[in-house]
Amino acid sequence: MTESPFRFIVSGAGSASFNMALDEALFLLAGRPVLRFYRWDKLSVSMGRFQDPSALSRERVLRSGYPAVRRPTGGGWILHGDELTYSVVAPLSADGVKAAYRKLTRFLGCFYRDLGLDAGYACELSGYREIRRTEICYAGNEPYDILVGGRKIGGNAQRVDRRRAVVLQHGSIPLRVKPELLGVISETKSELEHFGAAGLRELGIVEPEDVLERRLEKAFRETQGMLESPSEPTEAERKLAANLIEEKYGREEWIWRKP
Image (cartoon, rainbow, N blue to C red; front, side, top):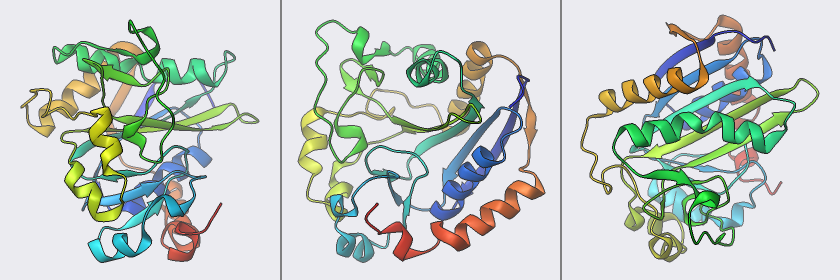
């Protein structure tokens, strides 16, 4: 991958299968760095690439009507919908995976601080104690998760191709965290309530989504460098995403398989 200004794709709202397929297509075809902003066309559940599907109740998910998908990255499951979502495809630096994660999340810290929130990496906060990993992305915390006032906000995950020295990172910035909805698809909502995950609205941020997206774009420009004007995915990227939907992201048996 060449070092160059980031392409900038603003996809709007897409289905769960399309969103994950396009992220993987951008990763597999990476020739230049890319930043993508997108939304979800309905409440949707995503599981981590290696997550055991027993972490969720398939019966409850089907009954809820929420589409389910498996991400091309790791981590726990998330209920998407009322959020801002981004993905970044970038060169993997020689410093390794953790350094890449920290570098690529700098714009999130800048974004939160620009909103007046006291945001920082968990490991840098006084009294930090790593909470055990849980099946719900928002319920635990790891050293480079971002906390505001001691509450985890959002979740980010990566996939790395060391041979090509390319990293895909995508993440969720929740506007609201609604534990009552989690109970519809799982019996683990008490974990989320106990650890106090937060969305922007719970933290007092009332700006509309389009304004927040512009602030997020500004933070990326300030921390990651040049960003081109918004453009569309290429024909090759769209074609590969369609193939990935047909091969796996649109197939229930693949989504619910045990890795």
